[in-house]
Amino acid sequence: MLRILVLHGPNLNLLGTREQSIYGTLSLEVLNRAITKLAKELPVEVKQCQSNSEGELVTWIQEARTRYDGIIINPAAYTHTSVAIRDAIAAVGLPTVEVHLSNIHQREEFRHRSFIAGVALGQITGLGPTGYLLALRGLHDHLIASRLQKMAPPPVASQRRAKGTRPSRSRFNDRTVSEGSIE
Ligand code: DQA
Image 1 (cartoon, rainbow, N blue to C red):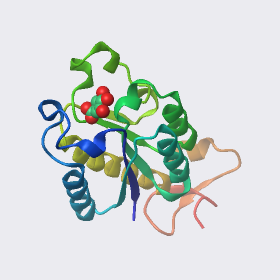
Image 2: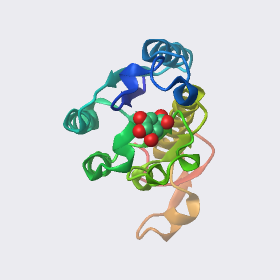
Image 3: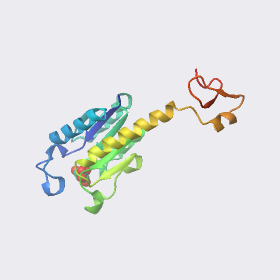
Image 4: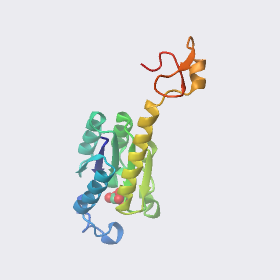
């Protein structure tokens, strides 16, 4: 089963009580429950973690390399400051979706810049808690598509171009494949 790590950055533990006009009234616990519910339907395995510490988030991202297939992250205020989180995401190379509850582009200018967006698969901003659910579906679909792509035989034209191979019929399907490309 696909495994996805969901990371919540600083102050998101205060969701539900924090600046309700911007972030709404849903608590982090209720949000995590909604993520878990969708994860069961897809199905994917999810783990949610929240930290107020940049270093802890970096460590979790590093550890995800061998344990997870993708990451969903709301880096909160670190979005706008953290080269360390950006570098960690680039280093592990896992497809990562950046989520924000509020629309960071409509807010103060210092929130318009994201250090994360340049290394993310995509960014969802301004859709409230639904953004996390869309991120989960999107990342799931992306991971499934890349798994299928890895399993698919290479296109016939590129096999013909490959040196020393002669096209033949596969034992497993009707497509023409190069000898030796399928065991
Ligand atoms: C946030 C937006 C950030 O600018 C802010 O610092 C947060 C939350 C969001 O989800 O809208 O803490 O990431």
